[in-house]
Length: 467
Length: 87
Image (cartoon, rainbow over all chains, first blue to last red):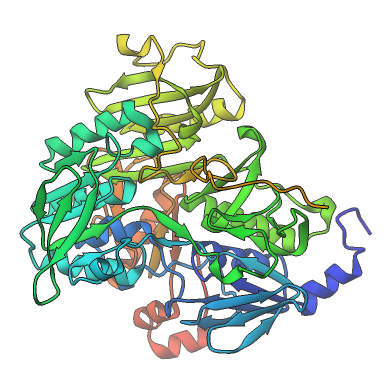
């Protein structure tokens, strides 16, 4: 036998007749299941999802679906292969018994596992006032049903749409509204759109982009209440600056919450910031001890990344879900010496107002920014983020072909400011400036990367040493 | 016929928008929009687009339903019904 671990009889048995349960039937869950089968897993595979639909793709929901170019119920993900799974769709997991190795379901059933993969992702953060959030015409956008409902509401030709929160999703919704010729107001608590994800320098560009495209952008304000008419339909929103905006469609776009409540009391290290795991996707229990049989992947996972100071990164990125699922699935079917770390370089994209925005690395970690190529004014540029003399991230606006270059530089821990010159460097790109991220203790809407274990806003935390 | 484009890989070469314009469209200079469930009539065009993508960013699955619509039933029986995805 070779050193690939085939001498491990229990692993061979797991592959032949084991029971693997995947909780979360979306992108990460599906790709993990495919990888398991590709690696020769022949045992039973159960896929549990709280939505009644087979895995579907979400990015189109805030783009082509809202534009009417695609239909929300036509976004089912293509399969790389058949996975021969027992699908439990439309039923949420409600509990985990780690000792009995059993997942409890909302319909009273329970499913036993030898290996468990948790990929329950995130959900849209609802409007904090439930009564106002329930008014007709108030939407969030996360699921296929949300996308379909919002698309219908936009197609009906509302007089004004109000988008609360100018992160990526909010900005994409505003962009789609303008493209459909609808009047739209965007309310953002921060100083600019995208400021939490990309900082104030880039946020200023995004603000210009919104305004030039006819968005009524209000920054530095909060929506304090939504007002309905007697029939229970939303008609207006009241702002913290005393103003009122009349709107018949309101989209609450205030980021996401991780789906971990079902694990409370289970003993797994799960909380509002996700499920902590090691670089090999194995979940920690509440004592910080790594589990042998429980793995996590996708938006709900938080794992340490050597390239970013071993901070626990929690990434709401499409590519992360695919890559982490692949690694988790590989490791679930491997002996320890064959396990791989999940060290994917964070990357995301957005498309709004006809501009292609892409990023690699961890921009919010950057303290400085340098426009390395092109110009902010032309909205075609590449910008590099610096952190303690290192290149830590890059963002491009309509300049995506350069991104792989910056990714290599980040992986090689290249210095910042970059000592090399670049094509199309302008005078504005000769001196780094502050990247201008908001104080992290004041949450803004939009960052899709959570940098560390606990938010600096969690001031009620006290550490009590154990025995 | 289901498809998804890995937009991390996509670099806006627009080959797909040229070869299958009813399914893929550029939005601005380099953003790509696509219909994730294209009409079976577009199958040939989409397969050409998949093959032409310089960064191989398009994942396509031809479903059993598509096959049934494309080929006469008796021909399918002889071919051995494929299930699941084909790249």
